[in-house]
Amino acid sequence: MPSRCCAGARGLRLRHRPGATLAAVLPLAVTLRPAVPAEADALSRLALRSKGYWGYDEEFLAACRVELTLRPEQCDGVHTVVAERGDALLGFYRLAGEAPVAELADLFVDPTVIGRGVGATLLADAVDRARARGVSRLVIDADPHAAGFYVRMGARRVGSVASSSIVRRQLPRFELVTDPAGG
Image 1: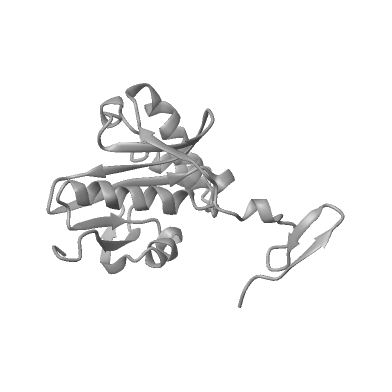
Image 2: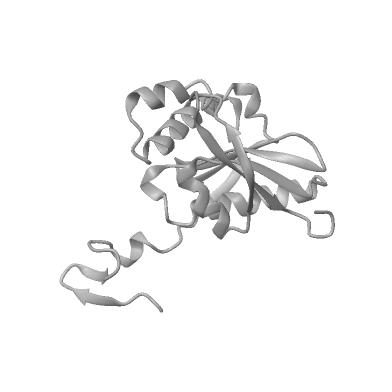
């Protein structure tokens, strides 16, 4: 059933998301480009903000800090791609590994634009780039809160894997076919 909306004194309001204007739920146009080494710190901070969106406490985030820190050499203009609008970095992804099966090592979106299509845009680009490199499947070890996103994007859960940051924590593992003929 389509979302119902109504006009009010302050603009269009969506009934299923109280307080949200139509502009707040429409997909956000972004520019994608390769990351550069000087952005490693900013992207690491973005990753922590994105992780924090899910309500994790400071102790949890501190335990994840090393894993969520990008090194300048990972922003090599090939494996890491950023989404930006104007001067604002809104998200990024990082591919790791080689064909035929590679890893979506990171995909983070700034909390201010989660739900605005930035993650879907980044994932679609990651799939395209992986396919162009001969990758037929992407492995994704996801935060449990992001599991629904990956399922909606066509990934299939294939198991679980231990977190490298938090002892006794399991993360859902997904595979996403990038090339149906090769997957």
